Image (cartoon, rainbow, N blue to C red; front, side, top):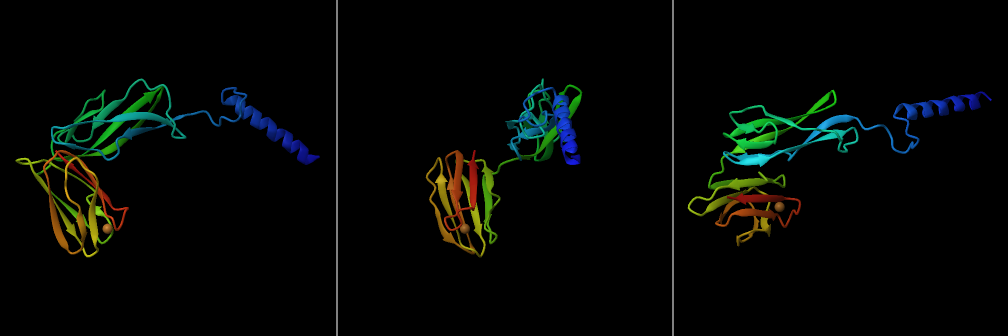
Length: 212
Ligand SMILES: [Cu+2]
């Protein structure tokens, strides 16, 4: 008898809670979405000196879904000597080599949240280096080079574990590097574009070369 009374009270509390959430009679929709965070993309962006990259920001609720009602984003850069950003469009311009935090602020009603990404500004050189490590990685996994007199050169430094450089997609005709350990091997790039490769021995080892 006592148990039955408790159940009745509990059911009443649930009904009251649903009503408080906006009076919806549909109890399958869960809690009312609340503006919780700001998501900024792309992640870990890089931009060349004098180059630009478009950033975007979206208001999110507590479940990671887009929260409606944003009327605009206010952008800022933590180091204006490294990168500037258009305060309303999110277009970032590289100023000098270094790192800056790009922050987006969104206000909906009386609530403001911010999100950010760490931006790297680089000056590509004509040559680049990649270490193929004993830890089974190409480090760095992404390299950007700027052709000088039509050519860029990347040198892979193979540590003690054998790896290959096997092209997946490339705009040029650069030949693969067969399994190599304890040596350095270079390849020239004469055609601009993004070159994707992996190690055929360790397929999780991947890298990209961007040739400008
Ligand atoms: Cu490998």
